[in-house]
Structure formats: structure tokens, C-alpha cells
Length: 104
Image 1: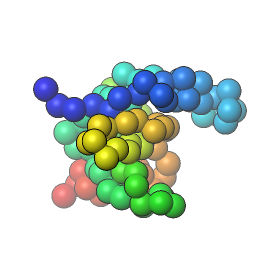
Image 2 (image 1 turned 180 degrees about the vertical axis):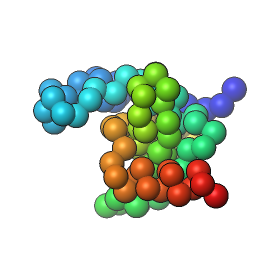
Image 3 (image 1 turned 90 degrees about the vertical axis):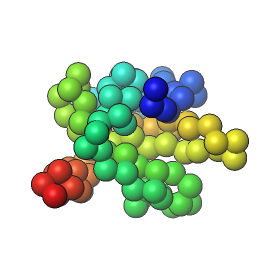
């Protein structure tokens, strides 16, 4: 079985995104984030190109259930545990990276 992020500390954060960001930002279900994370065409940046600390990774993948690309931000702790930090609908930069990689 392939590893998926542990969302124990971030489930509510991603599933209530619209309450913080506004109605134009979709809430992201954990199932969608995991589906995107496991996308065989997913693109991963480790470290995340937008990370200020360099500790997180960004995986951009397609979620059939959501019907759009999802950016999944993860952090691996010192014990090797993979934590889901956040997830959101991929932005235009993420979409370009995904589509460019998919074309190759």
C-alpha cells in the first residue's frame, strides 16, 4: 500500500477552507487530497517552492472526485511520519507544472 499523509491535525483546516478564505475557495475533503497525492502523474516539489522554511513538500495531483487539481502540502517529521499540513485547489503555477510534466 502506498503511503498517504496523516490528516489527524489538519482535517478540519482543509475541510473548512471556505470559512477562512471565502466562498470562492473550495473546501477540500481528505479523500480528495489523498487521491491527488496518489495520482500517478502527480508532480512533487521537495522542498515546496513556496516554503519559507524549506521543510515542506508540495505535491500537485488530479482528484477525480473533486474534478480539479489539488495541491497537497506535507511535512515529514524526525521520526519519518508524513503529516498533511494543508491542501487547496491548485493555482495557475501549479497547473502549469502539472500540465508541462504530463506532456513529457
